[in-house]
Image 1 (spheres, helix red, strand yellow):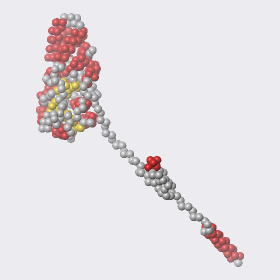
Image 2 (cartoon, one colour):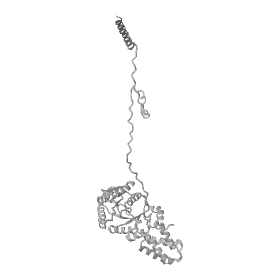
Image 3 (cartoon, one colour):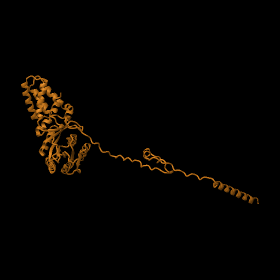
Image 4 (cartoon, one colour):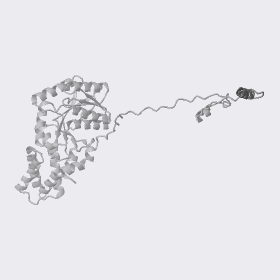
Length: 393
């Protein structure tokens, strides 16, 4: 009985609590809970300035749409090389004269010392002759110079240092021959570009000279296309393309071992299409046999002439090879009609007399000289600057 009463009491307590809870929940005058307001989206200052007057009194709960964030374009992984602006060719040899003087001054000092002696007997004249021959002036030009100097010295009698220097300068200049036409034919003909064919043995700096010549012409305001027709050396085409990219010149190349004449033809065609001033074609420099060389260079020239004329055939010679370079020059002279010589490495251990002997042997002028390893160290040859550098101040 007691247990039954306990259950009844518990049930009654639970019922009372439940009724009380409902009364509190639904009692008269209770207000509903306010709705949860979403967070406001921030307004950017520039958008605030564009909002019309009263736009801030927006309906409750309104939102503002932001523009998508600005996405910056990703930087390229490989940057294009910066195009350089080379200096003009004018005055280059004057600026590089000190380099030439350092390498050639021994010859000038030796000759001046010999000619300044009180007594010029046969032994002294033999020394003068030996100095000139050892400087690669060549036997025939040396004999002409020595004979002329002996005659002039006899006429003068006594000689001051200035007179001796004047005599030697006069004779050296006469042998270098300042009257030769050293103009580079690089002017376009109407709609057709000038074409320069660069020939020479590998190792003389032929491809480098081609690239430096392109820089020089671009420095003078000309547009240039390069033709990598030395298809037997992939490194030569790569090197030439690098030279072109540095100054903004297009390089036409073909497959390794491909037809050089085809590359030369395509280079000239591109030059015509792009209306450039000059096309420079670098050719292979293999002295395998004279017949093979003649066939290859002859074909390149004939194919080019279907599109344009070949205005210059520049033979690149290494001045340090001396008389060996002369033999190479003669082989090329027999194969193609050389119009000018580019003499490289004249600032090194070269003997400056090579300028005199190569011009005399080939009958063509030295038009360009390389006076250093820098990209702008190729200069138009100036006979007077050259002779003055040999003799010093």
